[in-house]
Image (cartoon, rainbow, N blue to C red; front, side):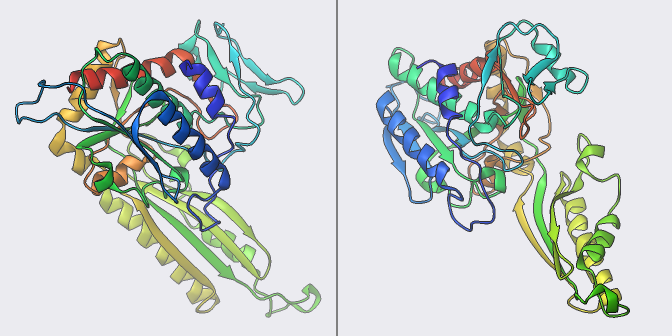
Amino acid sequence: MNIVDRFLKYVSFCTTSDENTNMTPSTPGQMEFAQYLTDELKQIGLTEVTLDKNGYIMATLPANNGECRMANGESPVIGFIAHMDTAPDASGRNVKPRIVKAYDGQDIVLNDEENIVLETAKYPEILRYQGQDIIVTNGKTLLGADDKAGIAEIVTAMEYLVQHPEIKHGKIRVGFTPDEEIGQGADHFDVKAFGADFAYTMDGGAIGELEYENFNAASCKIRVHGVNVHPGSAYHKMQNSMRIAYQLAVMLPRWETPEHTQGYEGFYHLIGMSGTVEETTLSYIIRDHDRHRFESRKREMEHLVRKVNREYGEGTAEIELRDQYYNMREKIEPVMHIIDLAEEAMKAVGVTPEVKPIRGGTDGARLSFEGLPCPNIFAGGENFHSRYEYLPIPSLEKASEVILEIIKRAK
């Protein structure tokens, strides 16, 4: 199966993750997809293919390089990792992709009936892909290139190596995880069982991206408790939890939000708000590349909750903070040769490396702190988590070529 057909098959699985189910994987579609992938990995010729009860897949491409070894006498075991779930920010059910042939640089009408248009004025990055075939959505769902493109790139590279034994290489490990999009992708990943010396997540964005710095990340849930009384007799009795929650939300710095920050700038991001007069819940994610500023942001959230409680009474607001992952830079810098290897591989296949910080995170961030150095390589898509997501086919193909080139150079 070629890489495009493989990707189009993968996006037919609904694998949206859900942080509210308290299960792993968090949704049944992920396990369905995992079972399909497990069968496929066996069919293409990988060994030691396992699928555990939590939906984690591991597999091996055995070494075939015989006497070809590193100076220390051993070839490195390299891993390639991608995640199976898609983000809950947009629907991942009934994805209807289509290929725009030889993109002409104009706006793309995704859905004529509902007037959903991928506009170049809003998304000028697409102009870089003029003349290329591009996979888009029908405007009603995300596409799923994050990270089914990464999976397709890894599987396609492994199949190629099985079919071309003349290419000598060391042992390669493959891992696919659930629930990355809700910050739980590394929760049950067995680093020791994976057994790689280092790995790469194929989970970046546009072609050329190579990343070993990411946000420090935390989730924050604030519950505000109110008192409901008939509005006709509410004087000095009612406490409207929605109004109190809004008051708390606007106390955060207006400009420290995703839409007003870039590069190394951190933010507070309100991702959910629901409630009644009786109770309202605010859900945030907190991000910063700098560990000190990250800790300060968490303390600021706690300070605002205390401030609300002083005004409205102790127990009015409750906060739950949970660290999700940390900046992997400190774990990658001692092994920068793995970044050099990826850069060299990209250049060898005609891709210009763009080393940049991730304004997000990957499974590799947590895995790096668990003893598996794991920088991030582009998967090729743009506008992730959105109905305007798209995937240039040459970027998809080049990512798979980069995997092959890394393996060839590390033998």
